[in-house]
Amino acid sequence: MTGPTGQRNTTRVRVGAGPGTEPYEVLVGRGVLADRDGLRRLIGPRARRVAILHPRALTDTADALRARAGELGHETLALRVPDAEAAKTAAVAADCWEALGRAGFTRTDVVIGVGGGATTDLAGFVAASWLRGVRWIAVPTHPAQPFRHHSVVFAVADGTIAGPGVDSYRLALRAIAAG
Image (cartoon, rainbow, N blue to C red; front, side, top):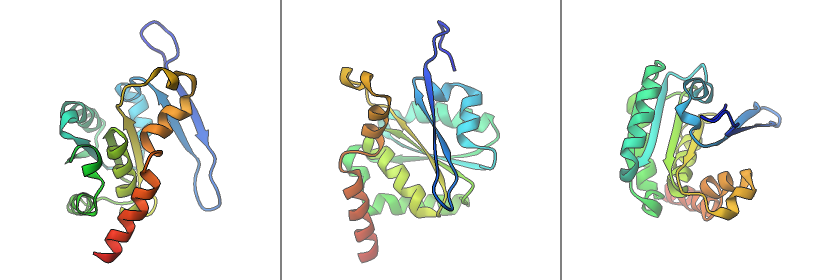
């Protein structure tokens, strides 16, 4: 994809898969979701429904994304979650699962997390724990600090996976099992 000046603004990385899994594509760049064809590719041809998890502050962004997904023929579901770390609780995950169940989400549908690390962590966890194989898309919205300009991977990893993410998943699983 190219930006308004014709400069390339998106990097594509194809991530290989192990036994029993399929490879997938990671797109890194600004405005990736504004491109209709790019959004269609990210959501995939089999998805019928798209859930968009977002904090209150990003309601307008989530609504715009929801409208674009709707224009592509997808049923959409907006799930507003608490801000920051308050989103990473078993109760919030359970609310998301309940909404996915009411909407009839299947393995072919897609969960999108729009926000900072807590929201994208939650989206990945909700997708992975709803049904095995549910695809998810992270849309990190935190501003990039200058040191992130040197590493494409770091900006994505920091906004979606790093930090307390792994511990949060373990703790959430423990809370669900105990609950």
